[in-house]
Image 1 (cartoon, rainbow, N blue to C red):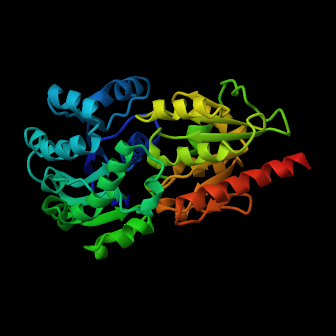
Image 2: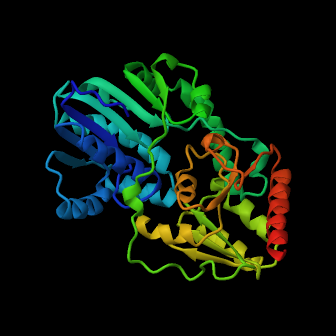
Length: 380
């Protein structure tokens, strides 16, 4: 986000915010740390379950001008969120109740500036404008769309979720509370052109900027041992997937393509966890795919996985930015990437492969054809 030197105090809302994490928590944490270097006093409100990791970090790395406040709904709603997997609904209500939480702590216009930074989506309201003279909204994404036939191979529950998302994309544009948030914002940071083009209102307030940039300090050489599957065999190609294990991230497309490749010709490391993890493990076992599942690792340890991999998959349907691809490129790991959402703005080289197709079967066919070409090259 932009920095305004005339402002001294800032209030930040970051639903997801944790050190040494990727994805949304990384966006929240990176913004908070950067803002603490720019403003005299930084107050941050986030979820209570982020408190242990934040407190442990600050004990070892004190930041005197940074103050955290923790807010959550009653335990009943937290349990309901986990059982029904309704994180987005919970986050929406969290933003609403945040107003009353802050009302008990601060007065109206207590801060020079306020900023809502996570989730990185336009689909959530915010009332931080009530507590500051200047309100920054963003980074926001969420307007990324894709051809509906791509849900063809997803389980029924996932199909329903994805159809609901596409439906809500258009409905929530007209949510009065979200429109109020846009109206009250002094500026709005949009993470990619797809979302910029999708959102019809208040474009004069928009500017396009990625959610976060790569922090080289996250990838300094460490004393971790490299993973087992290193580039020890010229006839074997090492693939990598890093991210949440959810269907819309496109891992299934990669697994389907690999069923056409003899499993002694490649290794696939899958790093991450998520609600669809059991589905992917079952699919790998059933189809005899040479894949190893690894739970989330610290960001500094990722350097060894990037360095020991030939290609990284990110075949996501509606990613806002594709940070793992940008990270992998820092270590000369070639990328195999889809052309949807924020991914179509990623700068690729002649050694990378961008799959462009509006049909899922053709998409998978092009991926299989490309992979076969890689193994033909290995055989030469």
